[in-house]
Length: 125
Image 1 (spheres, rainbow, N blue to C red):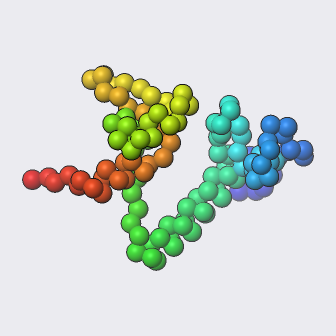
Image 2 (image 1 turned 180 degrees about the vertical axis):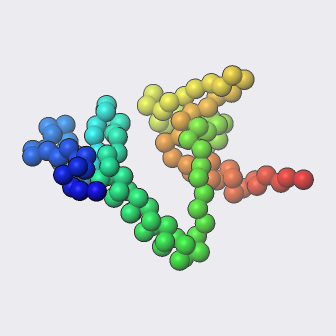
Image 3 (image 1 turned 60 degrees about the vertical axis):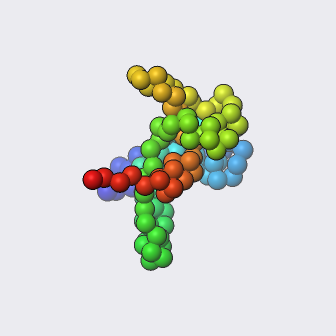
């Protein structure tokens, strides 16, 4: 693809809302676009960079013998209550109930999920 046809909305000046140098550079380079406070879209150039970083990390992890997992974004509130971090996040944590009235949350990290997965593996018969 020709660069002239590539969607990359660059900026000459840094946005006033950006304080961190990397944030400013990513916005100016057309890698990301801010949708709302703390919510960004990855633009084509940013996606390419992100995929390259993923590839490098995956290669290094494979070389070291590490295994990759993907954890769920929606997690049980019980795990967070058990770890003592449920109340620590405050109102910023998205908390929801499922149709069975179970308390769930949109997990900002996966420590609780991976700890639960490792400590009590499910056995299928």
